[in-house]
Amino acid sequence: MLGPVILAASRSDKMRRFVSAAPGTKQVVDRFIAGESVDQVVPIVEDAADKGLEVTLDVVGEDITTPAQAEAARDAYLELIERLKALDLGTRAEMSVKLSMFGQALENGHELALANVRPVVQAAAAIGTTVTLDAEDHTTLDSMFAIHEELRKDFPQTGCVIQSYLFRTEDDARRLAAAGSRVRIVKGAYKEPASVAYQDKAEIDKAYVRITRILMEGEGYPMIGSHDPRLIAIAQELGRQSGRKLDEYEFQMLYGIRSDEHIRLAAEGHRMRVYTAYGTDWYGYFMRRLAEKPANLLFFGRSILTKG
Image (cartoon, rainbow, N blue to C red):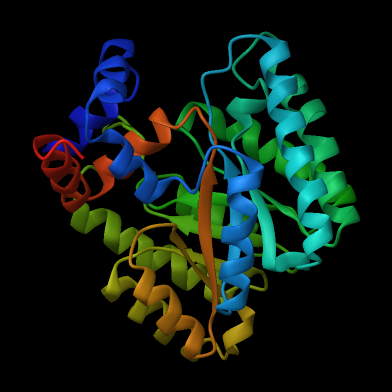
């Protein structure tokens, strides 16, 4: 399978240099990355709002090696929030953050990440919106969930992400599916060992359905992160079985993937949120998008061969 190979390449400096220099890279990156700056992404947010869509914004970048870089990541989100304030979209434009960007992997990383992310969550609340903590590899999750629990004491709308390919996630879902919670379920996009994660796609999909049922039957707010038509249909049916109205859960999909489906779900009355990444440090995010779906890799290969 190509997925694990691509995920390994996402950590390779040599592959980073090769991919960055490839003539077709920009064409494909532009498909998945909304821009490099706040100035470029704001019109995309406005266009999404005009189409009845919602967004969650991710300032890409994960390879943080110094506290100063973590503070710069914090400041990038604070700049974004200041720009969102003028749009007055409330929760229709929220943010997603990876705690690795806020220094989680550094010395005293748990405390550092919490100290850096708190002002972002506070600033988001001040303009009527919120933040979702993205899930990363399994070694970071206990820290992420602890930070999530701490932030929710003052900002109960703070969301988090769980991943169906991990064995632990059904238990996490039961704990999180409480009143006031916001939980995004995704399949998972990191290379994980067989000791902690399902390796077979069918098993991952079955777990996704079980976890979605837990969230739908719980008292929180489920956020269904998937492009899979079958899983989307199952989520809709589980929502009906649980007696949920269409505004009592939402779908989330990536910017640049199945855009027609974004519009269709919104037109049906669903809350449809587009995960919109931007920034200059796009490599890790980009490689995971290639790993998730073979068609993305084929598109990239054709772009290189045709020189963009």
